[in-house]
Length: 242
Ligand code: DC
Image (cartoon, rainbow, N blue to C red):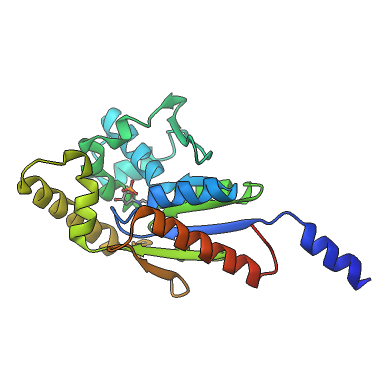
C-alpha cells in the first residue's frame, strides 16, 4: 500500500506558489518572469494591477486624493491579467493597458490609490483567485504577497538592494545622462517606498518566514539562479520537484 502512495506522490505534478516582494528597482519583475518561464509556472505582476486601477481612476476623472471616491469607484473597472511569463498582459475593461500604466502620471498616483483599503481588498481577492487556478503553480510579485495575499506560499522571497543600485537600474535606459537624472530617480523611488511601507493596510514588508536576497552586488542572472535554487530546495524539502 505504501508503494502506491509513494508512487503517486512522486508522479503527481508539482504545484508551487512563490511570492516575491520588495521595493521598486530590486529586479522583482525580471527575476519573477525569468524564474516562472524556467520552471514552467505562471507569473502575476500585482503592481501592474494597482497601476491599472490607478490608470482607470485618472482616465475616468476620479480624484485620486479622495479615498472615499476611489473606494466607491474601485468595483467598476474589470482588470484581467494574462499570466504567461513570456508575454504577460493586462487589460482594463477589455482594453490593453500595458503601455498607459507605465506613464509618470500613473507612477506618481499609484501609491495613494493602492493605500485605499477597498482597492486592496478587491485586488487581493483577484490575486488569490488567479493563484488558486494556476495549474502547475505561479510566481506572484508585489509588496504584500508573503504577508497578506498568499501567507501560505511554498516560498517567500524578499528582494532588497541599495537605493543607489535601484535608481541606477531604473535609470538604465537614460544611460549617459547627467547625475541629476539619477538623483531624481533615486528620490522618487525612496519617496514611493516610504509611502508603500508606511500605509496602514498591508504595507510593503518582509514576511517573518521570507528569505531575504540582497541583489545590490548581483547580476540579474545570479538573482535568477539564486531564486531557482531556493525554489528547488523548498520543493525537495516538500518531497516534490519543479
Ligand atoms: O511594482 P510596481 O512598481 O509596478 O508597483 C506599483 C505600485 O503598486 C507600488 O508603488 C505599490 C503598489 N503595489 C502594492 O501596493 N501592492 C502590491 N502587491 C504591488 C504593488
